Length: 257
Image 1 (cartoon, rainbow, N blue to C red):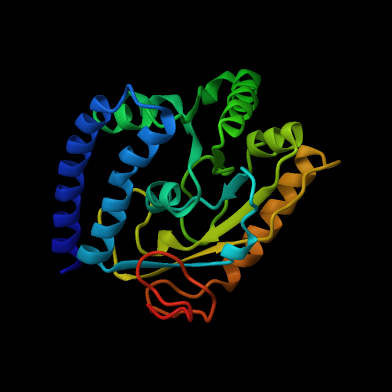
Image 2: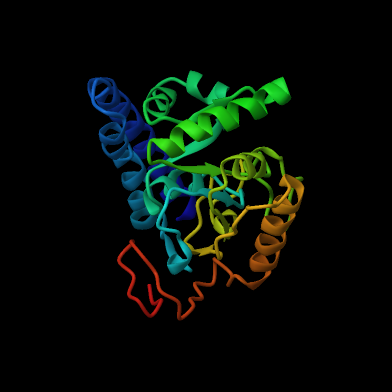
């Protein structure tokens, strides 16, 4: 049944991508925040389909840690799920992505219209400059910035070297940094076809004030919190929950799904 449900989900996701890509072209003349809210209807639909078809539910803990001003989210990267879900679980955000993603038919069309920070990862310091320049612009527009400092999806239980881009941006614009841990990779693994039923836990850590910090020190602080929190998260596949507040997805405040 996991195979059948995963196949059905994949087919419906592909169909939804085509429909929303065409919709994205129609709403292109609208202001960017309007485009964002319309186009991310695709994200809401895919998250909903993952829950209904594949049984992939979620809970969010630590919502009270979110600052009231546009901030930088630095998150664990394990799965495609968080790249889809985070834009609708957090305030409107500009995701730092590799420029090649914008060339993907249909998907790239919609992505290009919601103000991502698209960089050429092979350009070294030029890429760092792009993150800072475009990050400042997006924050000034009222967007948050989402960056996965590991740069690529990591298998469950592993972590990659943290890139300097997010920390460099934070120390140059002096806005709060929000570390985020999650276990989505246990249900929707890197490059995997199967989507397993279970409960993803997204944990939002206390915001870090980068004032007076060096990028390396900020990166270390973020990684230390995320690595420790990853060890505390409940297993996703056995459906364990916490007593923390959840949001969206129809869960109650006592954490029951």
